[in-house]
Length: 273
Image (cartoon, rainbow, N blue to C red; front, side):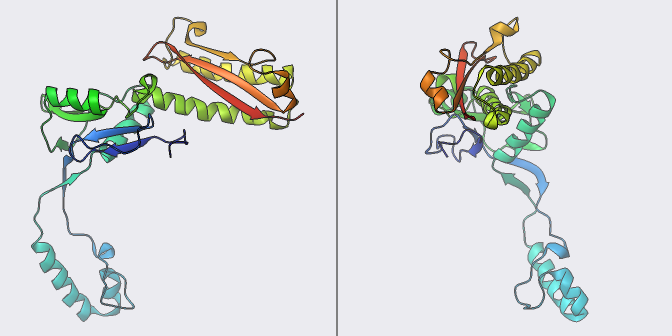
């Protein structure tokens, strides 16, 4: 998993201290569990699986084969569910957090920190104090979900990373997204000559893509030249040996909104000779 760059794992901490054994900028950890407004309801007959009937899978299927056996089985099921406490379901926070990610992605983009997001129909199971949050966030990289002013707010901003430049969720996810999209944009050059016209076509395609991100507010800088750069060419990103070996190397630098310094990605595409 550590070698992959196109994933982002939303993980749960069971106690506000335990974290994944893998330290990665592609992981964000959340605490505590959430008490939802969803009750534990008896499943429908179509979802009630039977194990004592070899030719019938669900309670609904039994009704179509034997009305008498269905009535008896339904009585047993109803009796068992009558003894189940009707209390709200408590779930790990990752599902709600994934929804917050998706909502922020749709409304703003992956570069917007999914922080200070209100979670509806869910309440933190544990109270996280300011001191607790500071310890979890700064020393463990755990994001806390807290109830403040009767609203549930998720601090979803930090990744579980040993790399300072990728210590924020939106920065890591932005670069994951850019890396994926740039690799796709370079695919057309696989069978093209490794020459200046191809390099310019690649540079132009990547520049157009990054310019669009800058216009949307994904990158900092008052002008495009302050937000990103794209480098490609002989004696710039490639040596004679690189070109002879069919390697087309592109360097892309971006000034993420946070932090402001450039973070550089390098891409190599094998092209035709």
